[in-house]
Amino acid sequence: MGNTRIELPIEDIIKDYQAGMQIIDLAYKYYVSETTIHTRLRELGIKKKRFGQDNAIRQIPIDEIKKL
Image (cartoon, rainbow, N blue to C red; front, side, top):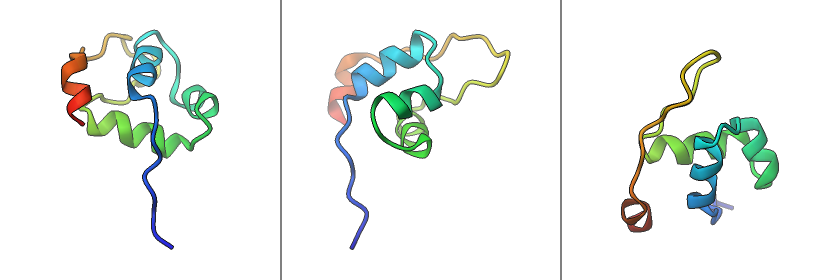
């Protein structure tokens, strides 16, 4: 048994995250672990928000996301 990469609607996840959803809520919504969500966001260069941190995150063009 190896780790199988789960296909996720990453564009939707990014939109939800940029809209203010927390990682735990994204994990629940997309039926995956918090680690999976955090890893995918980190792979795209999106840093995990900290409590009290501004909600602004780096915008990633959809064309860049589709290359992944």
